[in-house]
Image 1: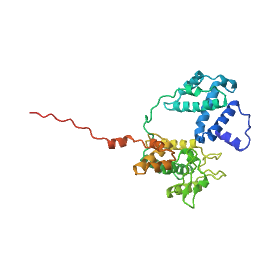
Image 2: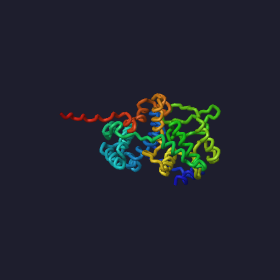
Image 3: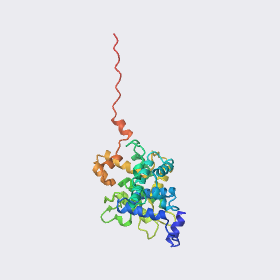
Length: 323
């Protein structure tokens, strides 16, 4: 269905229909998030899903006037309905997004003010879960076993090498443009919509060779300016979800054991490797695009192996002296 929709949209065969009341309201909400709050596109997608979910739960398209009589009981019923299918920490994000949407509606006069204060945040504890990181040896082994004789292998190897070399997010890899590779100056300038902090690291020989190999022998010929494209027709730029899915497929097919098969684990593994190489937290945060050191600290939480290395031996019980 996605391929058919992309083909119809590219062929101008897609019939445009009038937007629903929910679409108009959510469109104004997303404009507020982008222009006023300055959120990244990747963050607004989660807010968009929550806003549409609440409006559908209330039946807003059939009864737009229902927002005027919205009560705390209806909001609580929506949270309970969706929280049943979520994990432990996800309801906290749901409540935060819901509060933001309710404050936006209250500023427009669509709902009574103060409804956002009636929602209790689910209790979670900071650093209660172990950090999700991949062993650096496993990352290198996964890169080494990719078959680079095929176009798909060349593409995946170049994408994963960017993850492991620069700690890019999956969205930053998917959004890499051809013009962002500065061949003459030997630099690379990936787009960073989440942090909006410029990053122009040197283009390493290994990364440059992988990109050249893919661009010359693996990338389909088309008019798109994105570096990484789909391997099947219709040829389209990859999304961040496709980058994550490609990594999961490679990890599942591999004989290497991964504690957490995700692209974010590669980012975390690089941060730990740099920390153990005596790099400063400031430089690591600059490479990862963090605005505060507290965010970088989330990537550098100590692993159980580090705890074992720092642990002291248990004291031996003193033997009783016998007369």
